[in-house]
Length: 353
Image (cartoon, rainbow, N blue to C red):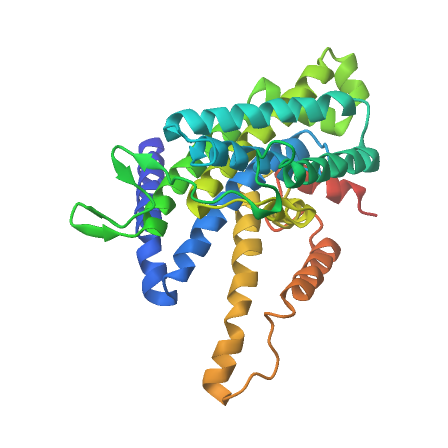
């Protein structure tokens, strides 16, 4: 019976892998080329959401400045792989540098906030995110480092084994555009982030994060070094954010401070809340929904124009309002999220009258 169960698991994993490999071609055939780029951004947001899930979902530390680590990774790639400074380092050097710099900034954010929780922590992290954005926006005088609000252009794409992911390539007889090749790179990175998140969740460190989230004083009394464990949560979450930022810069070929505003942090947090805090698969579902649904609403106006000759209601203009209503309804009827973790679901059930 055990062998049969293992066989079913391997079969399911194989079918899932085949489906993911064919997904960009199916999406392009059904919805158009632009949706392959949307799929790429969805994978980037999955990595960001999984990183923030370590801080918010596991350790229970409300972080509203997470987009700052995204910006650090993106600008590290932009400065080291563009004509701005005349540097052209390989991607296998730039990505670790960006992730390490983001982790360093995560520790710098975590150190002054060790005694803060709840609303106070949220305000401090929000301020940190705005400081980074304003800093990048003004770091063009007297020495032009970030090019200020104009951003950095001509950023080099990932060059993998002699293949530039910024150009259309022939691979095994298949013509792959840049969004297709980036899809497979992002998919591999998502798989890595999911693997690391699962290992952390089931490790001693993961259990220490959960203990701190539930009761920090009890965790400290039981021998957990709460200072180091909280700093590690900030560093690990920031590392994933820096990795995503570097990939974003290489994919876009352009970065500017306006890409890293407060709204981005709130959207990433909404992905976790909507999907289910602390549950990896719930976070992935939340990231997909928050990324895909607003983009899908953009096309409803065109559909009405085709069917009726005019647009009666354009949900594309109301997509943020609809998204806000959906979040309110979620918090009323499913406060634990669409796919909550078992522990989170049990806690909310115990708190209910």
